[in-house]
Every structure is written in structure tokens, then in C-alpha cells.
Image 1: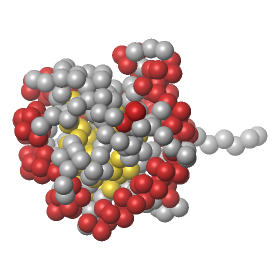
Image 2 (image 1 turned 135 degrees about the horizontal axis):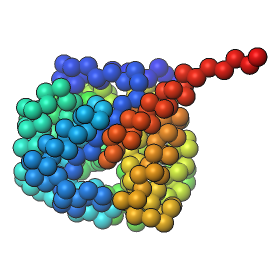
Image 3 (image 1 turned 60 degrees about the vertical axis):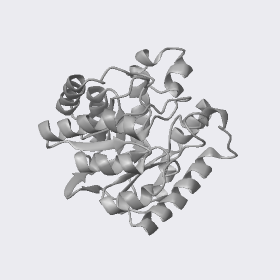
Image 4 (image 1 turned 90 degrees about the vertical axis):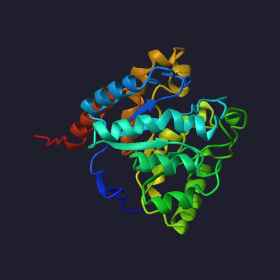
Length: 285
């Protein structure tokens, strides 16, 4: 096991990962699985950003295209129309915020970083655009590398593995090599919960998340309100906060350093309780 890198260079500002941090989700799409359409207006997006920052979010992850199972891709022009005004407004009003752009397009990544984003979060590992790795290297920003089997339109039809943990690990190791060769310095690892995985695959990955520690990069866990929670419990995504909180503590125990969430206050509380648990000392009489 390597020592995990604990800082990210975000366009000259250092983001510390000495303790786990929370990434707040800001969807500007009309069809995201949980909060689609809620933050399409600029005012609503800024109010939500202000709330998430006040609750302790370290990163605001802005996305303009839904990646739920079965979701269709939108044009780059439509994605830019949705995300650029929001990123520019957040950067102007909340200059202390670290902004991530959730996109599969190199052009969107480039224009979002110019508008104020400082992290690129790509669910496709560069598979759905030309030159993503090279673009991120040129921009000099951290990159979230995620595993996905297939494409959002078809990924749940192709969820087959001989050993999901080993195959995801092998994929991440290979892609880290490609990113390093392209010149990307700061990398975050995301096993891709719900992206081309069955419920069983997702729980196997969560139970063995620690194996990603073979790589010297921090792990991001994106399990907030996902189907592995609400389908297991026979509830809706709106009712899945309690289950999300339960699995967040497992993710932290398994070594995750970033939680990507819809509900920032609750996730920050999880981090605080996990830290309390880690610091507890018992001396038997």
C-alpha cells in the first residue's frame, strides 16, 4: 500500500484531504434521478450552493447532464448553456468555493475551468470524448477517474463481471497509468457505484473499497440516494437519506476521503462522528 496523497492542487489553491471532505451535488439538468429540475434557474442554483457551503461542503459539483441509467446524452452546446452561467455565478459570489465540473466532454471541461471550475469529474474515464486526459493535463486540474461498464444509456444491461472488485481495481490501475503518461498530476478514484453494476456488485465494491488503497490516490464514494439503497429497502430515492447515512460511515471506514452527496449537513455529521470514533481511546482498568 502507498501513502495516499492528501492535497489537491486546484488551479494554485490547495485542497486538503487530511480529513474526509464532502462534495455537494448541484444538478442543473431537468431529469436527474433525485433532484432533476430543482436547480435549473440561476437563483435556485445559487441558493442551493450557499446552503451547501454553509453546511460544510468543500466542493460544489456542477453537472448539466443526467447520468442516471438509461439517460441520453445531450449536446455540448446544451450542456454549456446549463452549466457555464452557474459556474461563473458561483465563482463570483463564493470565491472560496472549490467548483467541480461533472462532464464527459473535453470542451465542456475546458470552458468550465475557464469559467471558474477547478476539478474535472468525468464518469466516462475519457471514453466518451476525444482528448479528455490531455485536456485535463493541459488545464492542470485534478481529475476524478470513475469506472463505468458500458454507457449511461446501456450500462445496466451490461453489468457482468467475473470478479467486480478485481476488475474495477485493474481498470483504475490501467487508467491511472494513462493519466500519468498524459501528464495529469492529481487524480481521485471513484469505483462508480451504480454505473454498470448490479446491487450485489455495488455492495461487494463497498465492502472491499479499501483495496483501492493499493493506489496512492484518494477515493471518492458516490452512493448518495442510489438504487443500491432504495431498492434494497423497497423505498424511493426521496426516502433514502437514512440508508445513505448508514453506508457513508461504511465508506469512510473503508478508506474513502470524499463523499459526493445530495445532503451535505447529514454527510458532514457522518464525518464528524467517524472522526470521533477514530479518536476514541479505551484503557481497560
